[in-house]
Image (tube, rainbow, N blue to C red):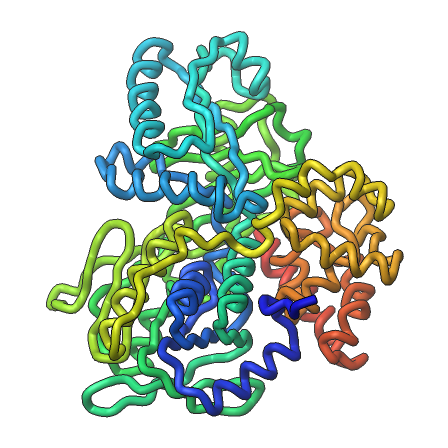
Length: 545
């Protein structure tokens, strides 16, 4: 059997660290969010030599803290930004059908109507345009009107005294952190070299151009040589400019978005719900056995590293949701919260180096250095292609155009055939069909790796926490194949126990740390430190509730 080139683990990390010391790369990417990972994939797929470093973990920042939606952005229609909506809808269709059918799933939403005729005509016209802008692909059904009676069947929790009917439309859902990690693994599969837990402390340069970067890894500094450095660090980009002594072509304003998670029985509905608020929109989104509600949109000037939900954020979400829900949801029902920071970009007044648009911003202020910021999760692939297009202008010779439109993420190929075999797979490995189906929608055809682990040790088929749905093999796999280096990486991003459970995985932390200790080389002291760090993380994240 051919070796799996997409594996991310301690051995791979150490090997790639050694390469950082000796090789000159065409493209050196700073940032392991979805855009940085997408840039690494795009550049590697063009045949360029690529290295990516991330100071924390894949999707540790904004890319794990979104609304988990792949969507065109209905609200952009009101701003007449048809180009952005068309672009995002095309990406949505592509992800559902070809690129990531195992990770990106169609999701229905109901838009409740309050003024039966006016709302139906006005909102219906917008949804018609939304459907038309997606182009030829048809991954989700067209929108439709539903009567008051049908609305009661779809979403009984909507207050019947103020809702007269509804319009049902479709977008898509994704586990953003898992998707980002899969983009990174696909980049690795295409030849990119990837190191997490690696912080860029400085760039190296001549008067004419940037020539690489100094990276701090495990207490050591490495001089990495690169023909072009690409900064894709989101809200951290401005800090990188300041650190590097380069004048940015844009300014970043941070906006905080908060979400709350509720148990399934808190809301009686079979579909997502979208509510127009005075500020924006509020999504009520089915998420497995929970509901995900959000988001806020408030200016933020605090700590970039630790954005937290505050009591006022939680109150806003509850108040807006309770304008249409019966019975009203209560604060004591909240399982968890999370907050993320959006980088909102505006051009610098005297910049001539920056390509500014509402979608995203590419800045090329000096030879050998490119940065990208702004945009939205759904259009990460286009953002990545634009950043690499800018970077290759500083490379000699002809470089192929982006090919990622035709590259499925790992786990996509063979997924649809495996879906037809769920019952037999469940029987073969003594798992429930629910468990196999859930894993297929997280790993795709890579589920065979999980099955091999269970075949060697049947104890790995045991649930991590009773009723959670996650099994121990997934925890171990996060360390052996998915680049997880801490308990927070595993339980907050590879698995979603932190957000999905009222006890956030705390009861299993010690046992799971011991499970992954041999793979990650942890001593007894390391295990104790990891558990303590995880407990501290939970205490901070859940402070608002």
